[in-house]
Amino acid sequence: ESPHFPTEEKLQKICHLLDQEIHYFNWTGFYFRNGDKDELILGPYVGAETDHTVIPFGKGICGQVAVSGETFVVPDVHDQDNYLSCSIDTKAEIVVPIIKDGENIGQIDIDSHKLDPFTAEDREMLEWLCAEVAKIL
Ligand code: SME
Image 1: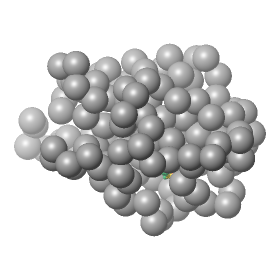
Image 2: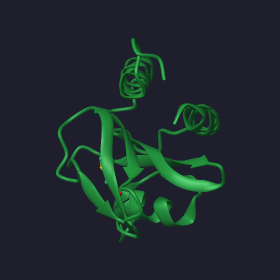
Image 3: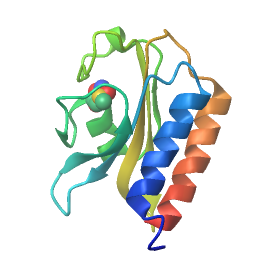
């Protein structure tokens, strides 16, 4: 990796750019698999501090995507039983996996304060972004 712009900083920059660009992206962050443990750990993010710095596989929207390897769009978090609340302001969430060499190694997680805000274009853009991110990891 480049010594002047390390991967960690690139991921942080991506969070900042998404947060600035799309007004209904109100928490934007990365989670990554913790070695070979069945848990996610919080990576770079922009938004309110969260208690969920470690998420076991299967728990919450993030933990479910860690298992499924599929994008999970949640138009209304109140409809979800298996959900970990980070903020009472969050109404919707999208989680997109990062797949490298066929392996589910992490994800981008976006929370919104708006109900049902995510468009098909958002989803496509985030899936493209995660494919690009996989290349630098
Ligand atoms: N809501 C997520 C937890 C992570 S916070 O949104 C940052 C979930 O249910 O997995």
